[in-house]
Length: 178
Image (tube, rainbow, N blue to C red; front, side):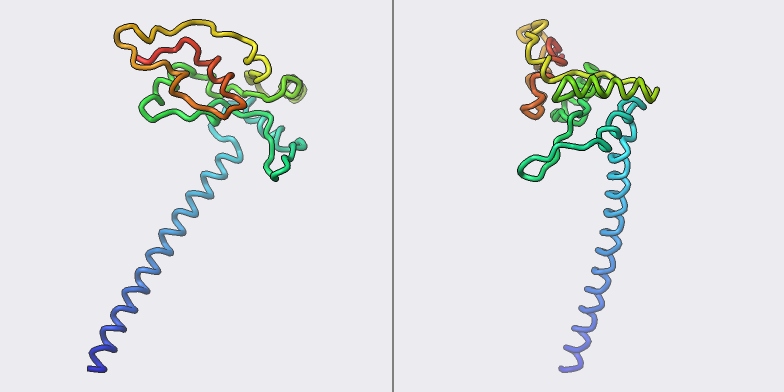
Protein backbone atom coordinates (compact mmCIF):
# COMPACT_ATOMS: atom_id res chain seq x y z
CA UNK A 1 0.00 0.00 0.00
CA UNK A 2 2.91 2.35 0.79
CA UNK A 3 4.44 1.60 -2.61
CA UNK A 4 1.10 2.20 -4.32
CA UNK A 5 0.68 5.57 -2.57
CA UNK A 6 4.27 6.48 -3.42
CA UNK A 7 3.67 5.62 -7.07
CA UNK A 8 0.46 7.69 -7.16
CA UNK A 9 2.19 10.66 -5.51
CA UNK A 10 5.17 10.44 -7.89
CA UNK A 11 2.83 10.35 -10.90
CA UNK A 12 0.88 13.29 -9.51
CA UNK A 13 4.09 15.24 -8.88
CA UNK A 14 5.28 14.51 -12.43
CA UNK A 15 1.94 15.77 -13.83
CA UNK A 16 2.19 18.93 -11.73
CA UNK A 17 5.76 19.53 -12.92
CA UNK A 18 4.57 19.17 -16.52
CA UNK A 19 1.74 21.61 -15.79
CA UNK A 20 4.21 24.09 -14.29
CA UNK A 21 6.41 23.86 -17.39
CA UNK A 22 3.38 24.39 -19.62
CA UNK A 23 2.35 27.47 -17.59
CA UNK A 24 5.90 28.81 -17.73
CA UNK A 25 5.88 28.48 -21.52
CA UNK A 26 2.52 30.26 -21.71
CA UNK A 27 3.77 33.01 -19.40
CA UNK A 28 6.88 33.53 -21.53
CA UNK A 29 4.76 33.70 -24.68
CA UNK A 30 2.38 36.27 -23.18
CA UNK A 31 5.25 38.30 -21.70
CA UNK A 32 6.97 38.35 -25.08
CA UNK A 33 3.80 39.56 -26.83
CA UNK A 34 3.30 42.21 -24.15
CA UNK A 35 6.88 43.42 -24.59
CA UNK A 36 6.37 43.68 -28.35
CA UNK A 37 3.07 45.54 -28.01
CA UNK A 38 4.50 47.94 -25.42
CA UNK A 39 7.45 48.59 -27.72
CA UNK A 40 5.08 49.38 -30.60
CA UNK A 41 3.07 51.69 -28.37
CA UNK A 42 6.11 53.46 -26.94
CA UNK A 43 7.46 54.14 -30.42
CA UNK A 44 4.04 55.17 -31.77
CA UNK A 45 4.23 52.64 -34.59
CA UNK A 46 1.40 52.93 -37.08
CA UNK A 47 1.12 56.70 -36.73
CA UNK A 48 2.03 59.21 -39.42
CA UNK A 49 5.54 60.62 -39.08
CA UNK A 50 4.43 64.06 -37.85
CA UNK A 51 2.16 62.58 -35.18
CA UNK A 52 4.94 60.24 -34.10
CA UNK A 53 7.43 63.13 -33.85
CA UNK A 54 5.07 65.26 -31.74
CA UNK A 55 4.37 62.37 -29.39
CA UNK A 56 8.10 61.62 -29.03
CA UNK A 57 8.79 65.35 -28.54
CA UNK A 58 6.15 65.41 -25.84
CA UNK A 59 7.90 62.51 -24.08
CA UNK A 60 11.20 64.39 -23.98
CA UNK A 61 9.68 67.63 -22.68
CA UNK A 62 9.01 68.02 -19.03
CA UNK A 63 5.60 66.60 -18.35
CA UNK A 64 3.29 67.86 -15.64
CA UNK A 65 3.05 65.66 -12.59
CA UNK A 66 -0.27 65.54 -10.79
CA UNK A 67 -0.64 65.36 -7.02
CA UNK A 68 -1.57 61.66 -7.26
CA UNK A 69 1.65 60.91 -9.16
CA UNK A 70 0.07 60.54 -12.59
CA UNK A 71 1.58 62.29 -15.61
CA UNK A 72 -0.37 64.74 -17.75
CA UNK A 73 0.10 64.26 -21.46
CA UNK A 74 -0.72 67.38 -23.42
CA UNK A 75 -1.46 65.49 -26.65
CA UNK A 76 -3.57 62.43 -27.25
CA UNK A 77 -4.39 60.95 -30.65
CA UNK A 78 -8.13 60.62 -31.18
CA UNK A 79 -7.67 56.87 -31.73
CA UNK A 80 -6.32 56.46 -28.19
CA UNK A 81 -8.97 58.63 -26.55
CA UNK A 82 -12.17 57.12 -27.81
CA UNK A 83 -13.98 54.06 -26.58
CA UNK A 84 -16.25 52.64 -29.23
CA UNK A 85 -18.56 49.65 -28.91
CA UNK A 86 -17.30 46.87 -31.20
CA UNK A 87 -20.33 47.05 -33.48
CA UNK A 88 -19.57 50.73 -34.27
CA UNK A 89 -15.80 50.50 -34.84
CA UNK A 90 -16.10 50.35 -38.63
CA UNK A 91 -18.47 53.33 -38.62
CA UNK A 92 -16.01 55.26 -36.45
CA UNK A 93 -13.11 54.50 -38.79
CA UNK A 94 -15.18 55.44 -41.84
CA UNK A 95 -16.41 58.68 -40.28
CA UNK A 96 -13.04 59.90 -39.03
CA UNK A 97 -10.53 58.30 -41.38
CA UNK A 98 -7.18 60.08 -41.00
CA UNK A 99 -8.63 62.28 -38.24
CA UNK A 100 -8.17 59.26 -35.95
CA UNK A 101 -4.53 60.43 -35.86
CA UNK A 102 -5.48 64.03 -35.07
CA UNK A 103 -3.85 65.16 -31.84
CA UNK A 104 -6.18 66.61 -29.26
CA UNK A 105 -4.47 69.10 -27.02
CA UNK A 106 -5.36 70.28 -23.56
CA UNK A 107 -3.73 73.64 -24.23
CA UNK A 108 -3.75 75.71 -27.42
CA UNK A 109 -0.30 77.22 -26.75
CA UNK A 110 1.31 73.80 -26.42
CA UNK A 111 -0.23 72.81 -29.77
CA UNK A 112 1.30 75.94 -31.32
CA UNK A 113 4.66 74.97 -29.80
CA UNK A 114 4.31 71.51 -31.34
CA UNK A 115 3.63 73.01 -34.77
CA UNK A 116 6.77 75.14 -34.37
CA UNK A 117 8.73 72.03 -33.42
CA UNK A 118 7.53 70.19 -36.54
CA UNK A 119 8.49 73.17 -38.71
CA UNK A 120 11.93 73.56 -37.14
CA UNK A 121 12.73 69.86 -37.37
CA UNK A 122 11.07 69.44 -40.78
CA UNK A 123 9.69 66.22 -39.37
CA UNK A 124 6.27 65.86 -40.93
CA UNK A 125 2.86 67.27 -40.31
CA UNK A 126 0.02 66.71 -37.92
CA UNK A 127 -3.48 68.00 -37.25
CA UNK A 128 -4.36 69.46 -33.88
CA UNK A 129 -7.56 70.34 -32.11
CA UNK A 130 -7.44 72.19 -28.83
CA UNK A 131 -9.96 71.21 -26.18
CA UNK A 132 -10.15 74.94 -25.40
CA UNK A 133 -11.50 75.77 -28.88
CA UNK A 134 -13.86 72.84 -29.40
CA UNK A 135 -15.92 73.75 -26.33
CA UNK A 136 -16.85 77.10 -27.81
CA UNK A 137 -18.12 75.66 -31.08
CA UNK A 138 -21.77 74.74 -31.07
CA UNK A 139 -23.22 71.83 -33.02
CA UNK A 140 -22.53 72.09 -36.74
CA UNK A 141 -25.26 69.82 -37.98
CA UNK A 142 -28.12 67.71 -36.83
CA UNK A 143 -28.06 64.01 -37.54
CA UNK A 144 -31.39 62.55 -38.59
CA UNK A 145 -32.01 59.98 -35.83
CA UNK A 146 -35.69 59.74 -36.78
CA UNK A 147 -34.90 58.96 -40.43
CA UNK A 148 -35.44 55.46 -41.77
CA UNK A 149 -32.42 53.19 -41.42
CA UNK A 150 -30.57 55.33 -38.87
CA UNK A 151 -29.65 53.14 -35.91
CA UNK A 152 -27.65 55.63 -33.82
CA UNK A 153 -25.82 58.93 -33.79
CA UNK A 154 -22.09 58.18 -33.55
CA UNK A 155 -21.25 60.89 -31.03
CA UNK A 156 -23.88 59.40 -28.68
CA UNK A 157 -22.27 55.93 -28.61
CA UNK A 158 -18.61 56.98 -28.52
CA UNK A 159 -17.07 57.82 -25.16
CA UNK A 160 -13.93 59.76 -24.26
CA UNK A 161 -12.45 61.20 -21.11
CA UNK A 162 -14.36 64.18 -19.76
CA UNK A 163 -11.45 66.43 -20.68
CA UNK A 164 -11.83 65.64 -24.39
CA UNK A 165 -15.48 64.60 -24.70
CA UNK A 166 -16.52 67.91 -26.26
CA UNK A 167 -13.70 67.66 -28.82
CA UNK A 168 -14.70 64.12 -29.78
CA UNK A 169 -18.35 65.18 -30.00
CA UNK A 170 -17.30 68.07 -32.25
CA UNK A 171 -15.47 65.69 -34.60
CA UNK A 172 -18.45 63.32 -34.77
CA UNK A 173 -21.16 65.96 -34.95
CA UNK A 174 -23.81 65.10 -37.51
CA UNK A 175 -22.61 61.52 -38.20
CA UNK A 176 -25.46 59.02 -38.34
CA UNK A 177 -24.99 55.25 -38.33
CA UNK A 178 -27.13 53.39 -40.82
